Length: 192
Image 1: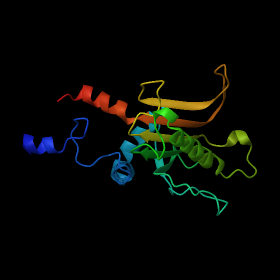
Image 2: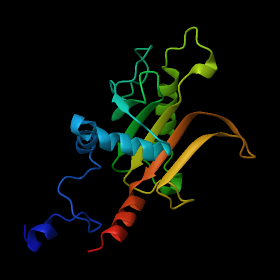
Image 3: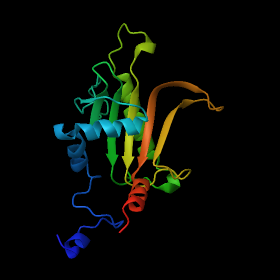
Image 4: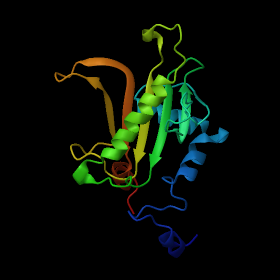
């Protein structure tokens, strides 16, 4: 490929690209094909900030007990480190949700993350289980735009805390990945 061909395939930020990985179909294919399981495991380990040995994919539809309820479908839904392991739902948000912007603090995408996380966690089979025996649930939102105005970090992790910062529990975690920050890192690693 010559230099002219490369220039026509640049992303808006100047990085080379053919298929945008932030598009759902491409994103899902990149991480869910059997050949890319190592990339999925590595990505989940980075998202959760802990060692991960395996990720098993499962049905992307969240089970619903109420046919009138909003039916959630995750981009990627997996179980971490074995059949009884923690669960992780991953969503790609290529552009701001309808009505979202910095002036309303991207409320819709944040509330969607909370809804997905609660749905994921509450749909565990719990009959007869002690509450402390539920697996942990992680909701990961990869956003191709800046969601938070208070930080300029690649990863933001949220758990239940009180006003003093003491954690109530770490059974659920909402994780946001700022892909605009990832592009800045990539540009520094691979300058033109």
